[in-house]
Image 1: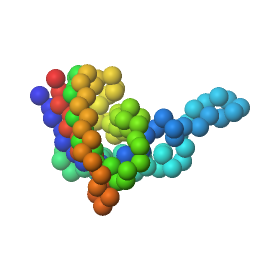
Image 2: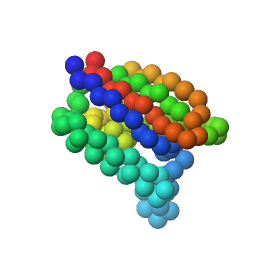
Image 3: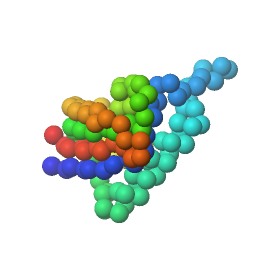
Image 4: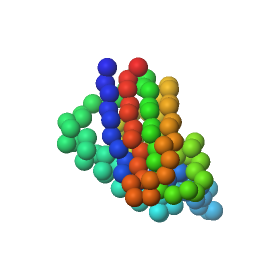
Length: 125
């Protein structure tokens, strides 16, 4: 069974409210600030995966566990945050499709103004 542990070392950003629509084409695309955040997190993850020798994309059903520390007391939309994580995992080529996540455990651990983060564990079922 494959297991992967890693940390996103910054405040998570939800993607639901970070989308725009091109009025001419109707195409949806992310706002620049969110896309920049996503690309930075994906680059960090790819660097980490290369360091640990992770090469095989996960293609089996998985369980994901997230322990989340917010950087402030603002209200956060947990479904939007989890969706952002799923998109990052696909883009970083950790999993083939977010449909593979059959179980999710989300633990809100509180506020850490100095070290906002998400500790993530992915385990094949």
